[in-house]
Amino acid sequence: MRTQEYDQPTNARLVPKPQPMPAAECVPPSASRRGRRRLRPVAGLTALLLLPPSAGLSARALGWDGPMPLPQLLAFLPWFLVPGWIALAVAVLARRPLLSGWALAVLGTTAWFLQPYGPAVTTPSGEPRAQIRVLSANLEFGNATGGLLDVLRRERPHLVSVQECDRRCAEALNTPGLRRAYPHRVIRGNEPAEGSALLSVYPLSEVGQIPGQLSMPSAVADVAGVPVRVHVVHPMPPRLGSMDAWERDLDAVRRAAERRGTARTIVAGDFNASQDHAAFRAILDTGLRDAARGLGHSRTPTWPAATAPLLGVQIDHVLLSERLTPVGARFLDLPGTDHRAVLTDVQVR
Image (cartoon, rainbow, N blue to C red; front, side, top):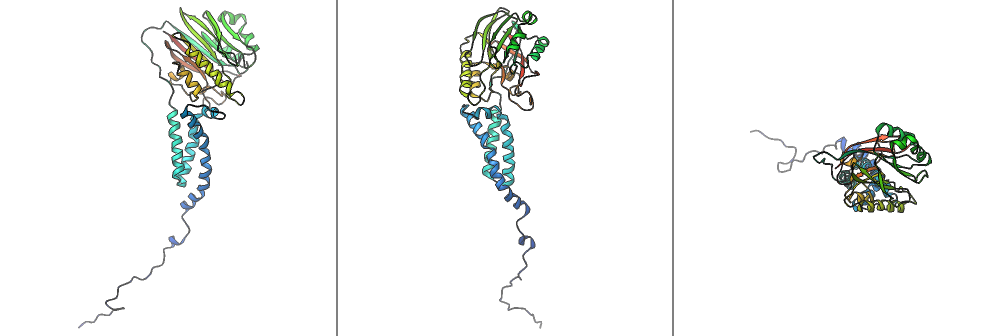
């Protein structure tokens, strides 16, 4: 008969011997966890990056330009993507869901507002009555007068809207050669920022002016028997001390656009506003179309010229009414000015 030996009674439960705790569980938190802890204060600071774009996007959604610095923020709305992406990256690494959601909201809203404002261009069938070339140029206190003269000789535009035309500019435009090339003109004001000019190869009538702190002349050009009203636009910039004037001037442009009736109208100049400003969109809502937007250049920067086209904002525009169709748009660099000129080819129908 075989015997069995047990270390403990047969009715006792077999209890496993305690094992030592693995070394990995005895060490401090992992490097990734330590990294997340280090990122928490950084995430808090990163949230501050989202405050300016959030304020700008809220104003954009409400259709309100607001006080300073909201108009300045709105001018650079596409760059809201930069703090949005930075905040999202930090929030994901730090595992901060609220910050992640905030960053995603900023990115999504910015992407929505990046869409061009206004209708695209459709070219009607049939031959146009005429095709004209329109130039708008801000000379920065007249410093780019020489560059403007070169462009006039090279590109030969038919209608020219000039802003910040000082005494030097006015004298240059009145030389015999320029008078032969542009026998019809309206020159108002001669102070460095105030002065503006409208040059035309076509006869001008009904000369007037949009009320504003800076000169904004207007006239009706006879283009191949078709009357085309042309407005030179240059409102005050949205700066400390001139915010009210900026809003009043742009509203005066809007009222002038509303009064056009059925007349073909061109509104060209330095608007000191982009499509992200409610005051500028109100002008477009009268039925005018931005030529650059219609040709796929709605956010090509025109200011400041030193950093354009990589960085900047489009505040120089050529707006067209019905029966005026843009078929070409270019942005020209003029030495001596912080603005790029806008050259647009337009069919008159």
